[in-house]
Amino acid sequence: MTSLPFRDRLARHLWRLTPQRTLSDFIGWWASVNVPKGLHSRVLETFVAKYKIDVSEAELPLLAYPSVNEFFTRKLKPGVRPIDPDPASIVSPADGKIVATGLVSATGTIEAKNIALTTAALLTDEALAKKFVGGAFAVTYLSPRDYHRVHTPAAGSVLCWHHVPGQLFPVNEATVRREPDLFARNERFVSVFEGDVGTFAVVMVAAVGVGHVTAAYDPEVQTHKNAPAGQVLTKVFATPPHLGKGDEVGIFHLGSTAIILFEPGRVILEPTEAAKPIRMGERVGRLAR
Image (cartoon, rainbow, N blue to C red):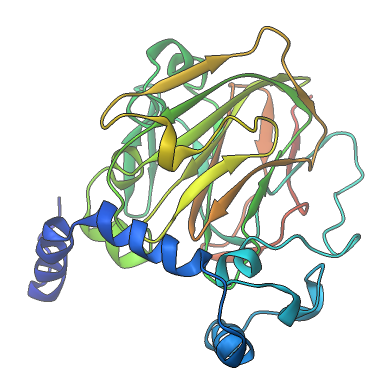
């Protein structure tokens, strides 16, 4: 790892000492508490102003949300995130910034600026990881201002999910730079699909302040309650639920990152500028022909 400036080394040391789970539980609890009537408008309006959130897209008026978490996990008005209609298109799973795209290397490594991790470590499933060697990947960072529901990049049936407990470091650019293998160390929820594009995965990487992740296709998923410390939980569906392109996969209850992975030769992702803003449903690639 490249030598870091003193400020980064200090921040890394402090975050490693921070009781991340306790801090995240507290933030999640605070965000879920109904705001007292006398403070309701001030708290929500301050939150909106701080992060420059476009409230006109929200399904409900701002003050109809009783808590910060209810607003943070808001649905959007119908039609404000149209799904690219081309049957051959691959779409962005989330609002945010695309921070990395490319092909998984022959050694199963995802490599991009400040990012280097193996799919085996990310997925904690060696057989599944091998499927993605040579395949396309994309990493999208969701900031606090973004819509925080994650959707499918293509149609498919959910074969299984993995909940992988882990750390809860922030996932901003500075932390990604100073924490090796960050995405394979933070807690994450992996949904594995099978569709016309073959096998693909949608990985929701949690971060500090994320109260928990829930899955739209399985009400059993409550990541802040499900797994004993350090134990990976897996569910294989006898009857796989089917999701269309752009259907909801799950919700970040405060913050983080979505990673999509495809088998080799199945998908061609379009070239993109680093940190390019993207909206859920916008075309990011196409089926390989």
